[in-house]
Image (cartoon, rainbow, N blue to C red):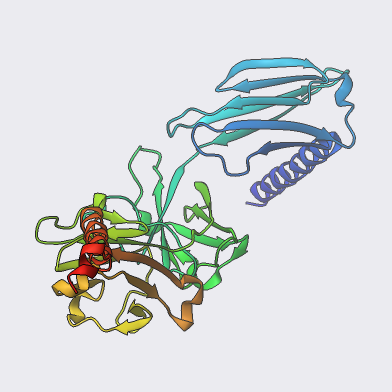
Length: 360
């Protein structure tokens, strides 16, 4: 029994001293192998820099292996780069340093790059037939979603709710929005134009072996308002936009306002005006549509129509659009001809000949 104890003790001491010798041997090399980017994704280029504070690298042979295949070597060659596969695959990377005495130092790294997509959506207004994505405007509420593409060793897709997410705004970590399974993040008010906002998400597995990062920069646009013409003949169509002047002889028609991407579209923030007089929309369920009813006498008049959106809490979204409503070219021409005719008749009635005097 005592003999076994001494044998075990000797083995433990031999293991301890051999481990210490190895660590001292590695420490003597003083070599560090740095690779960038820190969190690569599929298809990225990996750049390598070999450094040492004690080994003469300029007179050492340095070899680089990718997936056990020697890709490059040379005396004093401390820089190397290679491209990761475009798909999610494991890549092994080995660096060997052989000094002048023939001693070898080697270090191995394994890359299993994962991918994550980052998208956003806003509560900004879009008309029914608008097929595009709502743009980010100043002070809009905006939500970001991370879609990681992580796989385990067997090639199975990992449930995104089992990953850890760290969210950053302009490089500042959002502690309360980060954590296990937190794959979305919301900003109540996006900083206004022309400021840019950097949003970044870092995703990793519980064991930290898998990771990915994604960032995007948002430069909010200024809110835009468009006014459209609509009547019984021409229903709503994006081609019916009115930019400055609407010429029509219709007695009844609608003007539809579209405050693109604004998220303050409510009855308290909408203002309609005609000739600087506020007009209240009768149908509160459709505050963006103004119905105009005219009589014949009003057809020859010019009206100034203005639509404005205003909210003291989101003043950077304040905007307006205005148009002039006037008779059609045909009606205006007829009116001009009528005025000319009346003027001619008036001149005729004011002209007297000698016969007129003789007949008096």
